[in-house]
Amino acid sequence: PAGLGRFAGPLDDATPPFENATPAECLAWNLLEARGGASSDAWKGYVNALPDLIDTPTSGQWTGKEVAELQVGEAVFQASLTLGKDSKAASKIAGTGGIPGGGDDAEVAKEWAWALACVRSRAIALDADGGTTQTLLVPFVDMLNHTHETPNTEWTTGAGEGDFEEGKDEGKAGEGKDDGNASKTSSENTTSVVIVAKQDIAAGDELTISYATNTNLDSFCLYMGFLGGHNPNDSVELFKTLRHAAQWYSQTFKSETGEVVVDLEKAFAVADAFSARSAIGKHSGQPSDELRLGWGGRVAATLVDMLVYFNKQIMPEKDSEAMASLAVRVRCDELLTQMPTSPETDLEWLEQTAVAETTGEDQADPSSEGETNKASKTVALERKKLAVEYRLRKKGLLMH
Image (cartoon, rainbow, N blue to C red; front, side, top):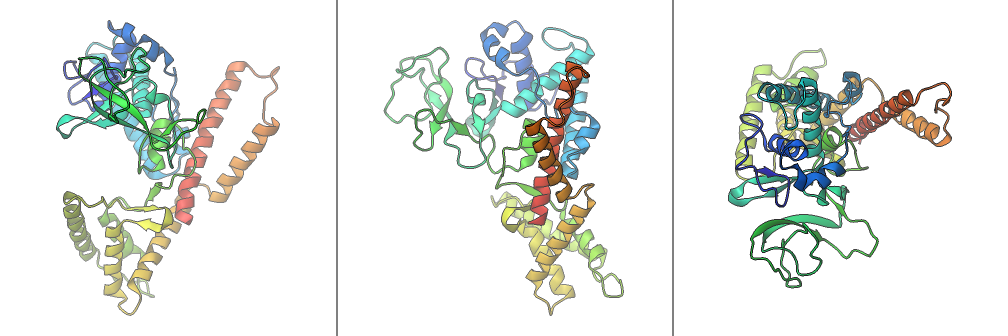
């Protein structure tokens, strides 16, 4: 289910924008109804407070060249995939009646992209009855800033019985966790989203939350348009599948005379066996083994086990685990060299840009450049800064 928040309710009784729409797409449609539909008055204040533009690689604002500046293959692919899917959805909506408030095909595409960008950058997911997840836009909660480490608050949900006795402002959330310090006064049962302090917070300190826990920088960059500094949960993809890894190993590690020492078909069979074992682990509740490298040298256990197995077969006299680490290092170096720019070049560009912004060296003469052109250049520069910092942080992982 998906809803805007309190008083909006889930979309159980609403018509989704098209068949098989995702919760995020249903919520985006719900937002458009609140913006231009008959029930917009109740949400007018909230909707008007939302930004008119969400500038992310997947919001339809970036050019193909700007998206390519990300350089990391999986990020560029995911952005392109998302943009293509969103475009098809907009065409479906335009062909079946358009959006609340009307508009031609171009307006439908623009408004649909805006609504999806709002949902992807602001919505929260909460556990609902029956083991499902409810996606919500919750006023005020979505205005708290994110931190990757040690946020001082968190959100939760629970069945409440109305507003708190104290601070009965219009629309104030009801009970989430009842600690006995607040009483409820309404007989109407509600489900409320509550911000709970995780530690003592001094007056005047900023309240922070985590938008997504244990999530790498890809989601923040692609869908929220920021990075937020160092993310200890960041990671970079080494291989798409174990078969991909097995093929790479077979082609990379050969004899001194250049002969293949790991037969490709046998390598695929080994990869399939490790994949089956990994799948069993997932069904038993064990952590998912994506083939990624994280900070601190975190590498998917299934990948390491497969590399160790290969090493034992072709180099039994060697330390198979040390050779597995070497294989990962070789793969990291290979991925680094495949990127168009080096980490040193990226860092130098960011440093030079920061100096130019501080000194005003690159600011155009107002008398020779129109305001619109200057604004466009500023937007383009901010996009490139995001892309360069993103790819530099990924390269840092590969170098670590």
